Amino acid sequence: MTSFSFSQFFPFSGRLLPDASMNDVTQICWGLVNDTYRMDLILIHPPHFIALACIYVASVLKDKENTAWFEELHVDMNVVKNIAMEILDFYDSHKMISEERINAAMNKLPFRP
Image (cartoon, rainbow, N blue to C red; front, side, top):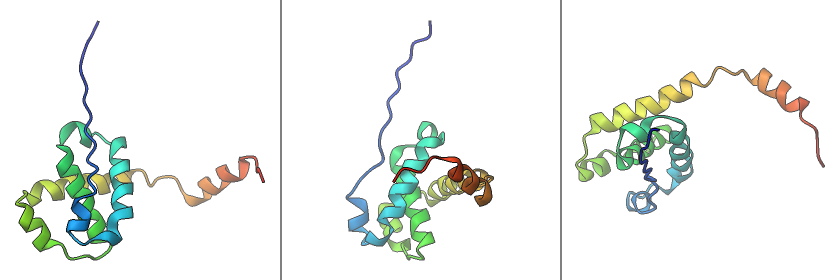
């Protein structure tokens, strides 16, 4: 019998985004953070780095300048960018289902008014 203890920390922190005045990227960040639970990132990296990578990806997607904000945090941006690349690779590898196949599957579902 194998026994182990597993603790999962949630990288949700509502304090970081308002401090960075990046409210417009909040929704994207939440989606990214939630999607990271489908990856092995939570087993490899500390939650604060995952959260920072999500903020980084969301701010790049929204073309938001955040270099000064990240510099104030004194974090290793190589680590943040590597995690960001892992997140983007996850999305790229799961983009194999075409929209036509999705629509065909949705059309097979029963309609409930």
